[in-house]
Length: 172
Image (cartoon, rainbow, N blue to C red; front, top):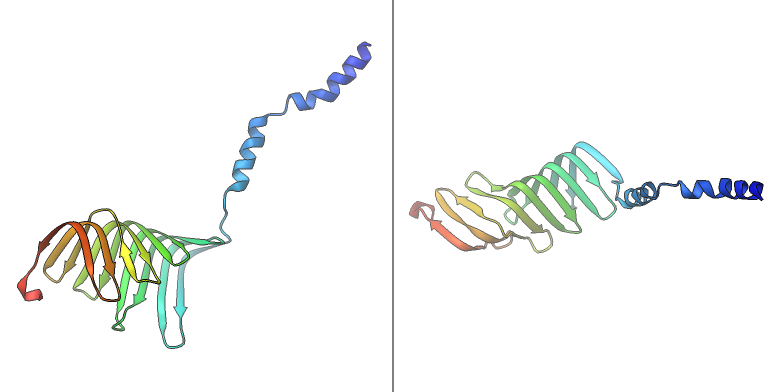
C-alpha cells in the first residue's frame, strides 16, 4: 500500500509544482505583435508614373502586418502647387492611410509657413490634418494659435477653437 502511495505521489508531483505564473506570462508575450521588418536610418519613396509623391525618412522604422511605426521621422509630401510640405515628429504611427504624429510635430512649407503642435492626425486620402491639443501656426509675420486644429492641404483652409490671431497687414 505504501508503495502505491509513493508511486502515486511521484506521478502527481510534476503537476503540483508547475509554476502557473510562468505559463500565463508566456501566453501574454506570445500575443505581442513583432515587427516583420525593422529599418535603421531608412528612406522610403512613393513614386507614381509622373513624379515622387512622398518621401519618408526615419532613424528607426518598424513595419508590422497592418501598421508602421517610425521614430525621429520626416514626411515630405508633394502639394497641389508642386511644392512640398514637410511634416516631422519624434514618433509616427501609420495605419492604413491615417498617420498619427506625436511629440514635437512641425509642418512647414517653404520658409513662410510653419505649424507646431504636440500631436497631429493626418488622413492621406482626404488631405486633412487635425488635433485636439494646442497649436501655433505662423505665416510670414502673422500668428494663429488655438486648439482643435483642422487643416486641409487641398484648399489651404485652417480652423481651430479658442483661436487667437495676430495678423500683419503686409502678409495679406
